Length: 288
Image (tube, rainbow, N blue to C red):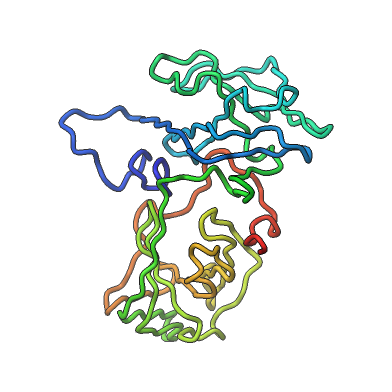
C-alpha cells in the first residue's frame, strides 16, 4: 500500500527492484514535506497545526507525520524518562500528550540523536495515531494513518467475462466487471450486484476499514468464510465500486475469460505501524 509497505518499492516484500549494479541497503527510509496543512486534536483541543509537516516512510510501516515543535501547543508535551532506540534513527524520547484536561502517556515521540543524513527530522515530534482524538488535513478528518501521497487507486470499466463459482453453483457471471488497481496490490475485480446471485451471500459481522476506500463488509458463501466483500458506501474518490462485490480467489473459483485467478503472494492485508482502533461512525464517509 503506497511507498513503504505491502509491495511498495521501499517495503520488505517489494514487487519490483531498483535497476542498479550495487545492492541497496536492506532498509531504505525516505522523508519528504507533506505540503498540506495538518492538525492534531486531543482532549477536545487543537494541539498541533502546521503547514510544514514532514512525512517519514519506513519499510513495513504506514507513513508517519512529524511536526515542528514550534507548531505544537506549548503545554501539549511533557517529556518523560522513557526512551527507546530506533534501529535506524537512534535514541528516541517519549512524551505525555496533554490537552483539554486529558493526558496520553507515550502519546508522542522525538528522535534526539539523529545522524547528519537524517537531520530533516531534527526538532520534530510525531504523535501516536491510536492515542490522539483525530488528525485533519485542512477541515477534513484523516482516518487510519497519515496520507501516503504515493498511494494511488484507479478504476477501469472492462468488458471481459468474469465468472465466480462455489462448487457447482454460479455465484456471479458478468461481462461488465470493474477492475481496481491499487498501489502495492494486484488488480481486484468488482461485480455489480445485478450480476451476482445475492441469495448465495451471507453477511457476517466483521467489518474492516481502508483509509482510501472506506468501510468494508464481508460475506460467507456456503461453507466458506469471508469469500466476498463490498464497500457499500465507498469514499467519493472511489465511489464507482460502491455496492459492488469482489470475490477472493483461492477461497472461491474466480475465472476471468476462462483463466482461473489466484491470490498473488504478499497480497494479504496485514496491519502495520501506528494505527488506531476505529469505530464504525469514524470510518463512515463524511456527511456533506
